[in-house]
Amino acid sequence: MTSCPPSQSSCPRARSIQERCSNQRRSGSSSRSATAAASTWRARPRHITTPASSDALKLLLKLPDASLDAAYLLYPDPWPKTRHHKRRFVSPTTLGELARVLKPGAIFRFATDIEDYANWTLAHMLREPRFRFIGTSPAEWHTPYPGWEPTRYEQKARLEGRHVSFYFQFERLA
Image 1 (cartoon, rainbow, N blue to C red):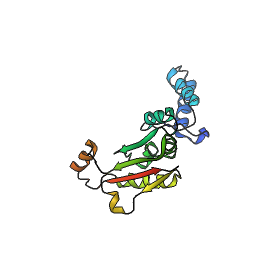
Image 2: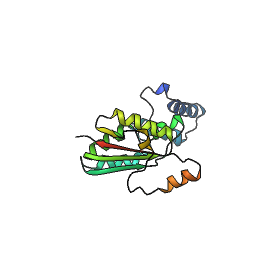
Image 3: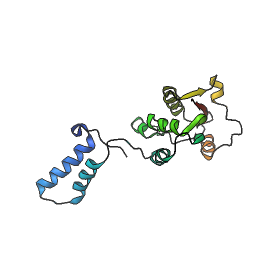
Image 4: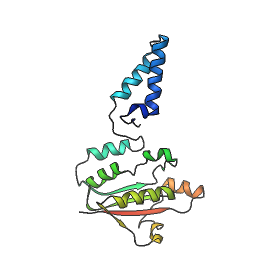
């Protein structure tokens, strides 16, 4: 669920709600749904919370600092459409919280079969100063971690013809 920017006139959702409310006022209709929607929209916080990561983000927010030895993000939903990229788990907000809850020296492992999401994750992780990318060559990116057990999503990707996966590791710096 996203919220519109403070400049409501430029937000299509805000305009739509405002138009419904003004049309109902003109027609004399007293439908509570549009009015309730408008008041709900105004009452929402201005930060963005995404459906894909809201449960995990809520958990990360409740965890104490430096409380995890490792974290894994295996075959997350790639949200392939550009307009949906904001829903991806890997974002500056979630990475900041992940860095906070991981102990120094802890490992964050990420696996996907979607090249665009692999590029997205690598770009975001390299911008996060509290993580160091562990990987010396692109060949390592396609080699599963020691003791790797394929997930059902990886098996599904293989059945759909996606045979190249990306296995990234990042170390939480002190």
